[in-house]
Every structure is written in structure tokens, then in C-alpha cells.
Image (tube, rainbow, N blue to C red; front, top):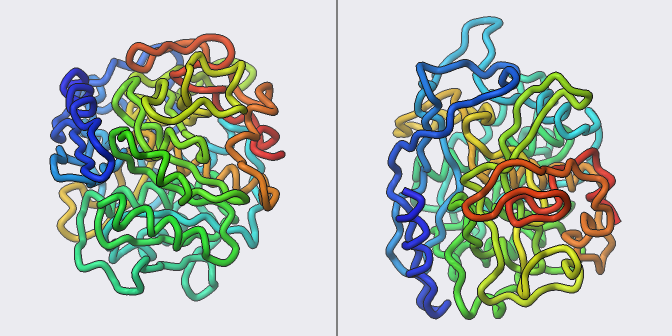
Amino acid sequence: MRRRLISSLVAAAVAFAGMTVGSATAQPQTAPAASGPPAATGQGPGTGSPTSVRLCPDRSDAGRAFCMAMIRTDLPARPTLLPGQQPEGLKPLDIQSAYELPLFGGAGRRVAIVVANDYPTAEQDLAVYRRQFHLPPCTTANGCFRKVYSTGVKPGTVDPIWTLESAIDMQAVSASCPGCSISLVEAPTAFILSSLLPAVDVASNLPGVVAVNGSWAIAEQPGEPSVDFHFRPGLVYTFASGDVGGVPVYPSVSPDVTSVGGTKLSRAFNLRGWTESAWGGGGGGCSLYEPLPAFQQGFAPCATRGTPDISAVADPDTGFAVYDSTPGNPTVGWQVAGGTSVAAPLVAGMYTLAGRPGPGDRPNTYPYAHPGSFHDIVTGCAGTHCAIPGYDLATGLGTPRGLRGLRR
């Protein structure tokens, strides 16, 4: 399957104005069986080896971005939970424990999440998630939640795949920064030039926004540096590094964004209480077209921009609990999500929890000034890139150890 994914993405490297992208048709894939210490709290054993599916299907039409969401298929979705019952997957307290995050903070700061199409049950599903884990309400009424139509007009399409992507993004931000406000910025389509990147501009102009997250990408294209202007100084931009083991994608490779890779996260009998390794599906590598930024010199083993910068949990085997009730979704209810679609919004919430960047800063440079503030991942591989001490093309500098590495 990975060979097909890589071949499709390489074939897509044509002129940016005529972008094409290929990814594997959503077929269940068998993930490596978990080993070592017990899995994270709330994760059930399933019925055998964990299996997962990548949600976004094959795209051959020019310029359409694909999402990075994955869902466990060996754990059936639960439309409802019995009193006292917990969903499978990592929960907010797990995320806060694993990455040493404060339980409070983020008030008055906003994360904007850019997605394609409409998510009609967004606010209701967010309320179910936050109520389940005893997080403060985030509603339109209290000003915490806002849905924004990037063109001023409600998108005419409801795509269950993108609603699940949106649910993952909003709920991951809630897990890493329960006090953060959330804006869901809906672009009318998944076309990157005409729809998603203009929606990034809208998100960047929203009052109170600290971070803008995108859990979508397209294959690298020669003209991509010409559209990096969408990512301005003074704001955090987190983008998923991809789920195509060891292949870099855009916008993650932009030198003006934080590229977020993926790990496998499990409980362990050690001082931290957790263990992490590189996730085999994580994207990354040396960019085909973006130059090596100054902040990566001496870190990335590339002559061009290297990705990812940092990482967080993404392996669906040790995945994240998420809730989506959109009608028509074949997996309605509580389920276990993975992909760098989980990692990127988790990091967006962490950055926002850390504070506002300086007005002229590029916050993706902050981790390189504080490499010791990350859990250095030294095991596992993503494609041909393996984790080693220090920076690597599988997990970047590692995963956050508190918030110091996400501040100036």
C-alpha cells in the first residue's frame, strides 16, 4: 500500500498551477501489533491486531488537498456510551500527562481550524466530547466556539470524511488546551489554491487567533514557494506532515509553518509514565522545492527544508478518542482516530497554551532554540527515515515536554 502511495505522490509533482495528487484509496491496512508495556488508558484490545483506514480517498483531480485522518477499524464505533462508560482511545488527561501540559490556561486565545465543506453538527459534537471529559463548555453562546464560512456563504457540501476530520481537529485542540477558544473555518471545497489557502487568510484575520491549523496537504509542486505568503509572521501555523511514511507534503514543507509529525504513544513503567517511538506512517523528509531555512541549519540533514519540525501521537494503534454524529457517516459515534491529523491540532493547542508569539516572530523557529525541551524520540522509522538522537526526519526534534520549547 505504501508503495502505491509514494508512487502516486511522486507522479503528482507537476506544475503547481496544475496540481494533482494521489493517495491510496481508503482500504483497511494491518498495523503492527502493539508490544511492550500496557496501552494507554481506555484503549481496548480489539479483536486481534489493530487495523486502520485512511479516510481521504484517492484524488486525481487537479489541485484538491487530502486530509490526514485515520480511523481504527477493529474497534467498532459506539453511537452512545452507558453511564460511567469510557470511550476507547487517548483522552485529554492522557495527552496532558504524556506531554506535561498544565491543566489550565489559554483563556482569551483562539485556535482557528481550516477545513473543507460543512460540518453541521460541529458544535453539538464538540459539546458531547467536552462534557464526556469534564472540560469547560465551548459554545457559541459563551463566545468560545465560532463557525466561520470563509467566503461568507455556508458551504453547500457535507462530506462525512471531512466532518470527521473537523471533529478530530476540534477535539484534539480541546484535549491539549481546554481553555482555548476554537474557530472552525469552513472552506467551500478542498481545492488548495482557490479555497483552502484563502480560508487560511480568513483564519489569520480572526480576532484573538494565536494558531491556525491545517490537517490536509497536497503533493509538493515546483511553484509552492510562491504561495508561502499565506503564512504570516506573528501567528502559529501547524500543518500535518503527512501519513505517507517518509514523503514530505505541502504546506507542511513551507519554511513558515510548523510541520508536525507522528509517534506511537503508549503507557510505560518509567519515570515519564509513557514511551514513544516514530510512527511508521508519518510523513517527512527533505523538500523538493523549499530552501533550507536558517533555523534548520545544523539540525536537518538536508540541503533543503526538512520535515517534520516536532511530533505528537498519530499512530491509530495508540489513537485518540473522538466523537462525530454527522448523519451519513458510516462510523457515527465514539471511535479511535489517528494520523498526523491528530498530532497537528494537538500541537496547535499546545502552542496556544504557551502564549502569543512576538508580532514579527516565526514561531516554528522556537523549538530549534530550545531542543532540550522535547522528548527525543530515538526508536522507530517513518518510511526510510529512522529516529535517532537529536533531530531526525522521522520525528523532528521530538515531542513537547511542557511548553518551554513552544515559546520564544
